[in-house]
Length: 330
Image (cartoon, rainbow, N blue to C red; front, side, top):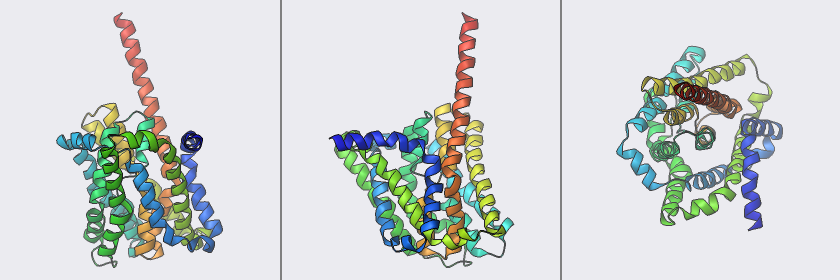
């Protein structure tokens, strides 16, 4: 019991350092290099465990409730898997024309499902958690079809796509652990989530660090000898990821969504399951494909914290304006 309580208490400090976690993991991978490459076989298993722990919070009833009114879910999915992959492809063609591997990397960056860790940020800033969980689960379950299909449609024959292997990897790493966590939580009527999610949550952060470090070691040479090309990759990745947040904000503003739904839209449009993307890139493509995905890891959490601060500041301003209006009415 004491061990579980201690693990649960460790989660809050880890959440505070989330913006620094993935850059530190990449630095560790670059510094350790070949010493971590031998651990690559563990990555799918670690990732499957992370996905299983994250899915313990999923509720079948909440997901079904969101699916009965799927408008918002479909709108975010359209941003995730139609608009943003096109943005990634356009950025790749604009800045790296003639390099099909880098273009594929930018498409993969936005073909992978929304980030499981987005539920952390949506929770912190008071967004619609039910919508987020429904989106994560639906996006995860569809990922074995969406990811290869997106790559094939946008890249065609430019790069050899091991679609079947990729679908199998996504099935074992993401889909089956997600379904297992969902069913276990449903069977226990939420008891598993209440009892085990808090103490197991730190393991997700630790697992994320390990996965990113191991994947970072695969491109240690590229990062150690960074040149103008690598700087361009990082710059283009930064710009397109920021655009993801802005598109989520713009769409929710245009459709006049409330603050909770808008918060969910922004985080889920901006964040991606980059650790899964890195695993796919490293396992099924040449090393250059992983560069945009690994680059995104450098600042994804930092951008989430930045946009979260903006969301929080906007909420305080609206709250202050409402209070002032009430005072005037009084």
